[in-house]
Length: 213
Image (tube, rainbow, N blue to C red; front, side):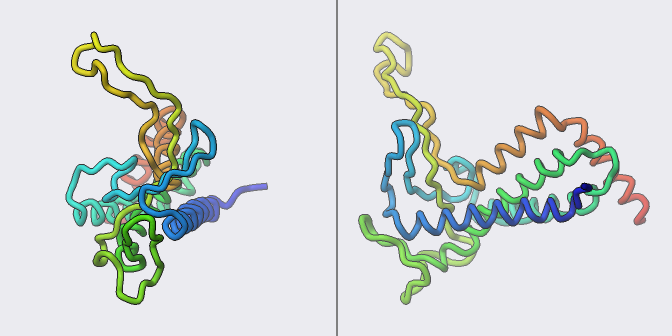
């Protein structure tokens, strides 16, 4: 049975975004800020928020980050629509790029809408969706919800170690969400399995652009 690549792309993007947003809304309305629920010793649900970078990193201005991500998703969508039927491009490549697009879109929704959709009470109070007094921030100024936390192990560096001696080290300390996971999986697949398809896709896109002139 031949797979309709356009439908596959749409299905992956929709499923990732729905799962990501459903999980974020559930956490946002059932956990107070900073709450840490231990499922196993190495897997927790811990509710935090950040300004939009994967794994809680914050490197750029919030508005620039959000607008840049919107432009990037628009380009990736255009890219997928134009290369989905190229014969030499493998389906796995399309899946990888779709995961990246879906992950970026999932975090965009937080940034664009969450500031208006939720309030931001002090712990241990829970956030309310559609609060009567309005949200905690303006449009495009919302914070991204993170909750997946895997503290696999931790230890204290020996005192004789330079710089880090006596400090606590935890692996893996980052807290992230389903959208971040989709981006990372997509990038990993591209780098290790579909790097050749990138060149084929770019060449095809270049020919398409030249033919449209």
